[in-house]
Image (cartoon, rainbow, N blue to C red; front, side, top):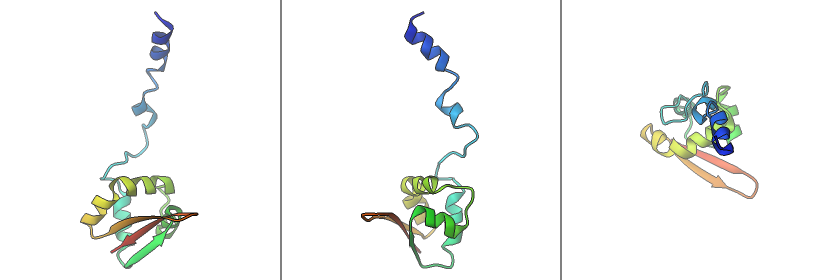
Length: 101
């Protein structure tokens, strides 16, 4: 067996799917979107960073990075169906998220 084949054989159990086991799958069906819709029920507009959104929503299950990834990847389509638009604004110092109802 070549060295390369031996290394590949040793790394087989550490597949990408097995590493992510136990973590929620980041798809358009993620529970975070319903939390955002519920958060925006009594607001017309919200502007802030991802960490501000997590703090204002009092969401302890999703990190700011995960929230930003979900909003970037699926937010515009998923939240638009629910009546919430998402816009991303970059300044010199911050990356802001704008939510409008």
